[in-house]
Length: 327
Image (cartoon, rainbow, N blue to C red; front, side):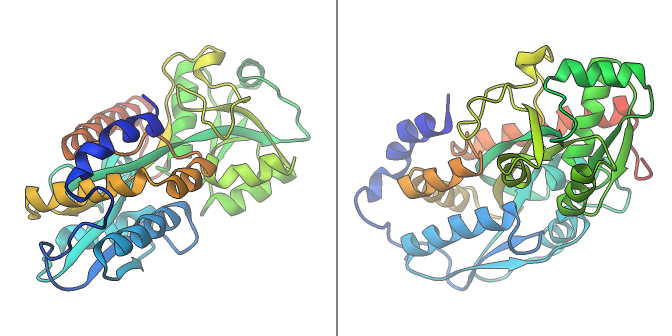
């Protein structure tokens, strides 16, 4: 079910006690409300935290502060959050596919358990990646990319925003599914990677839809396929990997809200209900659609099951592709 339809059906029941008015905040813990983000301001995770935080502030009638603690593709903030015992207020963390499904299975320095050291609250949504190349290359289909890799084994390059990123793992999924070998070229973020891709220094990337959209629409990069099973509303004309022969191919970036592991289930469910109200607001739906973010919302238990499934899926890819810190 699409995010818009799912939330429209479920948000009313979740928020029914406060329908038509802001719910009382008197039953929430006293003290500051903070959302910790493991990336610098301006990135997708930060933007989504601020969208949700602003609306929660309006619902609760108190400030919601977004704090940025960038580093190690989000893992620095996730590690800090897992090890800190909070004594006041409401403390939340923006979880991400990198921090809660991929990085802990690759980097030995990460000591937190993504499935045990946090209290799941709500999925904000997932966004596809786009298989992109320089617009000068003219590769129009996934099959053309496969044929290029077969003609030049070990010579075709795929850039990523860093080792262990979704871009990296999506390329490994592609290698295994297509039965080809390619070169992984890690960068420190999508920005420098895109510069080299547009300039022809590297051949392809499974870049995030959030980062790639502007360059694709400007004609500097060519979008070949998107990586969720269903097409995103923002790119209705672009086929999916699934539609081009890679059945079940799903490599998406997802975003969610978690709390400290000792957060009560009652509080997690209360915040979950309010986030579902936020995700059903027309202006929020419009903004998230613009980023290709879909399928958010649902219960605490649904988000917990989703994270467990993602952890297993990406763990299988890491082990099958033998991805390590040095990859």
